[in-house]
Image 1 (cartoon, helix red, strand yellow):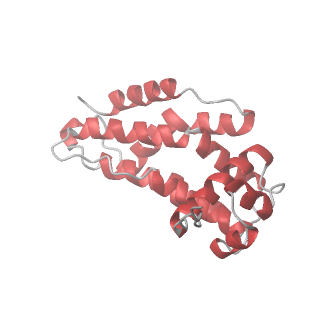
Image 2 (tube, rainbow, N blue to C red):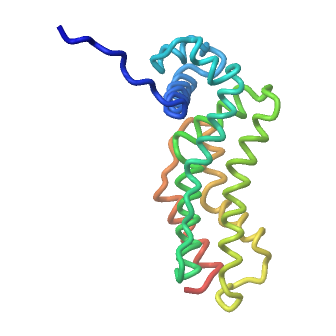
Amino acid sequence: MARVGRPPAIPADKRKDLVLRAAEKLFAENGYDKVRMIDIAQAAGMAKKTLYVLFTNKEDLLRELVGATHANRDASLAQQDADPVEELRARLNAVISHVLSERHITLCRVAIGEHSGIDGLAMTFHEQGLKRSREALIATIEKVPAARRRTDLPAEVIAGMLYGASCAHRLMSALLTGETPDLAHAEADGATALAGLFAD
């Protein structure tokens, strides 16, 4: 009779990923306050003790979930020799896609709306999400030559205009009403704003 060996150990980073995915799903379905660490451990297919080796408590887990979500979408869109306005369009569409995604909206509700009492969580969410998106837009706007700009407004102001035209009201509406934003309309509004601000 062949011996049945133990399954290979799951690497720590893979276990963390399983936990973060399970926690995100449970937070979205039940709300942060109703989810217990044992629920997360069971959903991730591990013992509660193993979960506590990875995360000190539920607050630390949520902080890491917020950070990991924003870090995962930060692949560089910059291309050598790319047209700067086209690069800006791609960057703006990436921001729209991220900010208005169901995942981001759900975490927004959890991190800011449902449980703003966690020290520094709202700021972490802002720093790693919206602020980073804004900074990426500004850096891309600064690559566009002055001759192609239809305005002499600073890059920071232009970034705010692009974000406002495409994302701001849609994100707020999604948070308040629960309606899913229409990404195609957001991208169309972003393209209209770009056309008004930059020459092709």
